[in-house]
Amino acid sequence: MMIRPLDFYNALVQEGLDTFYGVPDSLLKEICACIMDKTVPQKHIITANEGNALALAAGHYLATATPAVVYMQNSGEGNIINPLLSLIDEEVYRIPALLIIGWRGEPGVHDEPQHVKQGKLTLPLLDVMGIRYEVLEKTDQVKKAVQYMSMTQKPFALIVKKGLFDVYPNKPEPQSRYPLTRERAIQMVLERLNEKDIVVSTTGMISREVYENRKNHEKDFLTVGSMGHASSIALGIALEKKNRKVFCLDGDGACLMHMGAMAVIASRQPGNLKHIIFNNESHDSVGAQPTVMNNVDLQILAKAVGYPNTFSAQTEQELETVWNDFYEVSGLSLLEIKVKSGSRKDLGRPKEKPVENKEAFMVFLRG
Ligand SMILES: Cc1ncc(C[n+]2csc(CCOP(=O)(O)OP(=O)(O)O)c2C)c(N)n1
Image 1 (cartoon, rainbow, N blue to C red):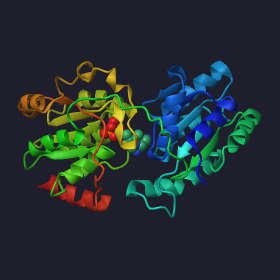
Image 2: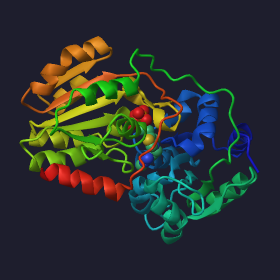
Image 3: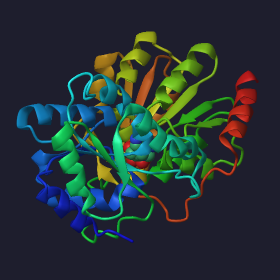
Image 4: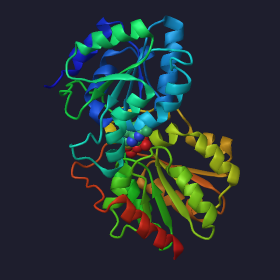
């Protein structure tokens, strides 16, 4: 049975749950579109990471005595475990929140390798943390969840299986309308690399586009999961491979998710690390919901945390013009490429297993 996003949304609002925080997920794309369409901006924040969303919900509860809704992909369980157990848990402050969790990698449903383990552990993790949950099937489960939260002041989770939500017709338009596509920008970057250059690419479409635009894959570490950590992986490599250039191909959403990594990278001044952020101002891979990166001057930010060299481009011509300086400059450098949201429909996925990717990559690093 499918649920119409608007019916579910109305059920939440009727029960007094009118405030939404979260990080989007492809399984939640339709309900995210509905939340964006129907909620006033003060009552909906797309956060940097899922832990932030839960902490916001805690603040909201402290101020209003009303739980907020926190939505996320199950990958985000990793990011909320800390505030779940050390902030809102009954043995600490005992604060309720309604968690809506997209169940990627549900056992028995085919999914990408990075979702398989998380999919198996989605419910056991909730069990072990003592969080009550139900797999969402009908909108009247919202009432039950709200009753439970008001009786116990504890969180409640609704688990969303693939295909549960029907299409929400009124999808907000993506904001970013720059001329370059992300895939074209990625092609231009890859074409300009030398034989020995190392690539670490971020989660989602960026890694898929890197994969599709390379004949051989040993030069690229595709960070298929672990959103926000590609730049730290790149730092770990750059510090040990000082005579090789390491290119981190990052997304704005991923960069934002663990932005502190940039300050730590800069503290080490790895001159061989080239950090490229494809900024489409959105979480394009999961439905192009906006990030706050339309309002962030990434060059100033990078400079402020200690990147000595920063560049930006938003057309093929500009990328062509800045590339040599970016490539050749000796200190740590950032290149922001503004791109539009969207990808081609027939974009493939890596065929090799992550472990195979790792093994070939390690051989390439040794060479
Ligand atoms: C911890 C975590 N939360 C959420 C997701 C779901 N997710 C996968 S890709 C993605 C969007 C990435 O956005 P960005 O880095 O800007 O790249 P884009 O897709 O826009 O190219 C999200 C939210 C995830 N994989 N992991």
